[in-house]
Image 1 (tube, rainbow, N blue to C red):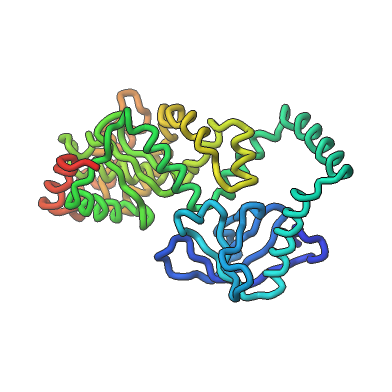
Image 2 (cartoon, rainbow, N blue to C red):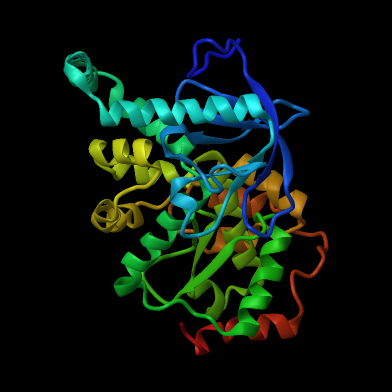
Length: 346
């Protein structure tokens, strides 16, 4: 039985309509209230699809029905919304918001004493287990809109080193067609950068940063597709938000948990540190299986790995298409357009 923020409700669930992005088809979800989060789950499997921090949830249409909710950080981007018409659930969420507002408006002596006690307990716990637990929790509940803002901010902060993104329209279109072959989520934002990185990596918010060397060099579309596939697998096993939370100060993590947004100054201070550490690569067995499933040869990808990378030998020797044919990854026309993607920048 799930515990709830309102103790009088032993188990409170309601059906709602969730949109992860503005243009997405509304999806039916089961909404429940946890101790600190609003949980959106798949009605068939009960698997959680999203966690919203309760203090950061706001109602976009007060007094109107059905009620429309969103994470506070999604206001500017107009992203990720939840529509509810269950009166009991709406009342429960409203009471949570009222309780939070009342605590802020009337702290009182008792509340002040409790706050001091809690702070002292936090200080003691901080030396042992609290920072990792808070960081892990922040990774799990950061809304999609805030992830997108964080990923875009990292790109922007690194622009002096990477240069402006390559953006020739024909090249972008060809790149998206190739990305679809690798199983990257749609929509993914694919960004080719002239300098400052090697290979490809996923940033928070579904942003894929790609080295221009993979496009303009001699390795061909097979190597590029391999790096996109490897970036996808890495992000599936190691959430890109993990790297952000490991670098962020604990007070900035707390700000994210309470307000739904990571402070701008935090991102400007840690972007370079995040960029300097390549994301971990999936093991060669998982990579080989993925190369086989997507019908992409692994040998060209292995040839571009840094000298000494232990995965390069098995990926080359066990290439599932070392001697067998595979479907073309893209047309000659698309590859030429992709190689010219850096002739226009923006």
